Length: 266
Length: 340
Image (spheres, rainbow over the protein chains, first blue to last red):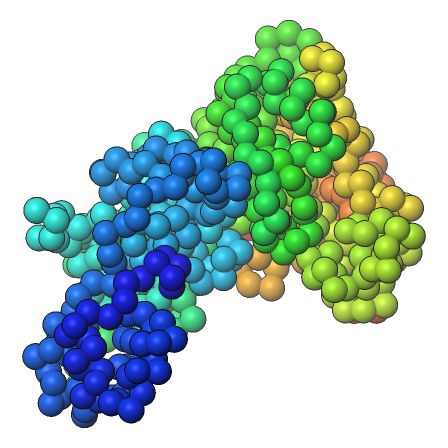
């Protein structure tokens, strides 16, 4: 979302701001501060100040950044606009996008699905992995314009949900939690989407470069940890959570508990 | 990224016409390389024609013509589907292995078979627009013409067939197997007719025109890749040596295929990746192996004969001995049916 589309401050926000930085308020309002800048400033103002205003502050901070979307501009209004209708996590979406817009930017900036991450934006890290028609792909190298009629699933669509809120995690999500398959968490949505598709590929008998005999083509394959590592090589983790990621995937794949490689101290 | 017009091709004929009528248009298939190059401002098309919905995805037995008994692989089929097709795995395991050695699961789901052949070099001087590169800015046409790698950092670069205009290497793994299997590329021309290009003639050495990677003309569409019938399925192997064990381009790769009768080599095919501007057929090594016993000493002799012609650059002398050992290793693996 462009900054100039974000709304001006609400009365609550003005009041909070006035209490915290009275001398700056007029100037900032005059120069057109918007909510996004406001929240950044509030974050910088620090937790101690906010504690005194916790009721208001909490309300302000938990209000989603999103606003009711402005009506979509017609394709003629955007240079090289393309109309696209596709499904995202089961819901039909209709958009007009700039022809240059990737699926990743469309998900994050237009549909407010920020689970899929922009790591390298060059197809080298896998953080943007989503499922298109059930297959894992890189959304940073997919143009939204090519998604007409496709069905896209993102990390937000994996858990079972009821009335819009998640009620049960996908088994792969639960296994990543159990095995601590992340540290900073930035690569995790991509890792999980990739892992979900990987298990489907194994069920369909797909081979990998480390498969000993690719000529054997009968039925689902049982994956060794080495196979899982090879098949997940398109998802990088700078924190190095690889052993735990492999353990999580192996547990869901084999259906048998895999011993945790970590434990709480004391 | 620069603005471009996006169109959907209705059929192969309109796709080819669309491209032919605009010299600055490009076909968009998997997009895994093209989009990346557009983000870096290396490729600057003003129109993309999406061809992914054209029905050129079939994998089927060839029932007539020079490749009768072989297999036709649709140009717009996805790499992952080609690698896992039962007929490919059974009869051309070398191709399955080579495809699976490249890129990642995600990228193989996106990349098409035809597009794979048209990947451009990953030479960093080609990718970085502030650096000189004759492939990006043809010789003499720009202040940024030249070759940054020739006397720059050239560890990843060519040891065979390079010119002082370009020392880049060709990146595809799939194409190395296709070179060894002597595939044919089927192409639809602007006039609607088809033509066949022998795989050895598809890619080019850099010479004075490194901006031309292939002998495909603008407006031509790869409709299929044809694999002739062969007797290599029992004895083939694709070896890829790289800086990390997966998801990296090759330092050296070797596609080896043998036809063996009572321990003697009837026919040998060896193609190398990571060493030249195109898939490098090790013809000298192949010829030396015919009629010989499949022994390590004979493999080594053939490898050394091939690598004796290598012309390494300042930082890639290691590729010569690596090439020697990789050829020997790949032949051993091939002879043992893919096992060490």
